[in-house]
Length: 609
View (tube, rainbow, N blue to C red):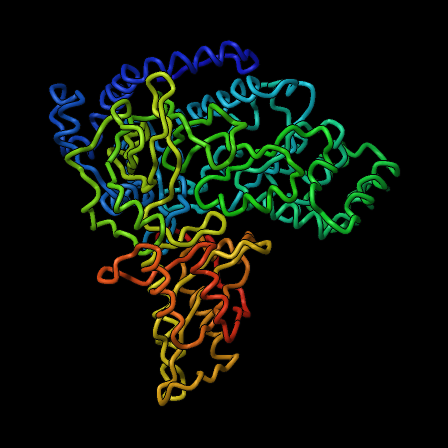
């Protein structure tokens, strides 16, 4: 169902939000009916439903199964290979969206249509009235939002496969968007659409600095990307100031559209502005640098929920007290909900699901399973559904406050009862629409940027490194391991803690730098497409590190976990640890540190290769 309103009309937007959330149940029924009516002739649905008599909620739930990506991958792959869109959708599939999750080492593909871009445009427009409700005067300046596109893949069908944000920024809905006085960017579109991420970053920061007196808000989509921008600014501020001082653009910006658009923003030399910016950046401490460089900024808009929460302390250091605002919850599969209390503490962020975006169902996850996932003592596999009660699946309006659920979606674009993999906790309701706190992605143990490494991915990579580099009689045995996402530096990087035992005695193992560095590189080579893209192309993850710990360290780790309430009989070594006592034990017993000495190979291969 399509809904339109003028995004410059705040009152109309807030009233529309009230109508949507008040009538959530009826709207969900309408959404499902529209999806079934629209796509009932698709090959996928015809396998389960019998014409007109089955176009209802009960038949749909009784006959259409809840699925994972492995179940639907063959259907989507056929479309990627050139078969008709009516395999899953009555509307033409116009592109495939690459998820940050992977399948067999390659990005998952999600079908999308032209109509879905309209739905996303509506979703973005609903963020505006909510911010206007809490922050005055956003129509009196600009937002310095650093937005980027990423590499695309051409499928055998000719359809492009691209990340969801790249899809939106390259669409006519973004490029020909109507003027919205509440949402004016400092970055020209040409700088956002630049294929070279370094040139794009430089040009967008240059434009944001030149227009610093007009900037009322700063941000990126993810917290990790914003901190990379701060680090980039720290490394390049002298060059940026030189450009402002002379009114020119540095010679290594070779993209003509970028150069021309930035020169139009510079409008000649500005010695005074360059001196002001350089004086702030030259200060010994960068604490509060965002407020100092953009003194009129009212908040920092970045997603700081889920794995991005690890960046909150660093953001707070740089922000100088500016609120950290997480506005939305979305994925490649679907745009879900918005934060109706955007100025809340980052730890209190909840998202209200918009009932017109898709048909939502929820698989209950019992508290015991949630705790095991949350504290990373071990994670369930897709087939291990003891805690996921499919017979107890509930609708959007029937979830219970305080319970944990995995979200299941049915979309207009051809996903039917699809398990997204996100674990959510119900924190309350706004009218009849539930509000959720994002807990985490199921099965993910490590994440720095858009990468999502599962326990199985990590095990396979560690095993391969062990087989290839620790098999000689002179090499020690790997007896235990765990991991940690270290974000204390920018960019963050994966840390593996390995306990190594000599094959002949209990003396400390002899650690050869070359062997251990090869192990680091082998692990990286074996991680998935998204991780390798982040390392190779995006430079958003640093070199993987192995920290070797002394013998007996993992016994001490077990003692600690048991002292915190774990059962001795059911104890399993956590494959990922978080800041706290466990990490302190591991770090206190490190006897060797080694880093990958090369970047893993990556290229945007065709999906049929």
